Image (cartoon, rainbow, N blue to C red; front, side, top):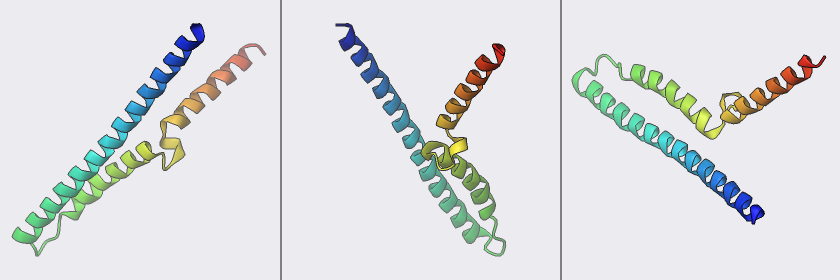
Length: 103
């Protein structure tokens, strides 16, 4: 009976982790969609009312940098920005602390 309960707990944890991951991915795509819509709107405004001075690329650049870092975190493009790297580093530091206390 205890094995079944442990298995159920493991399944619940896996489900919660998968649900959180889906939420992160969905959040990124929402961020991407709003980026595209707002930048298109700003480009329209720029070209419609002041085509002699192109300025919409400044907000596109700033927001694009934020979007890039959001993507790296969600899709683990650069490993040291991801949560997995953080967790591994925390474990490594804890292990070093345990080993140095006894020396």
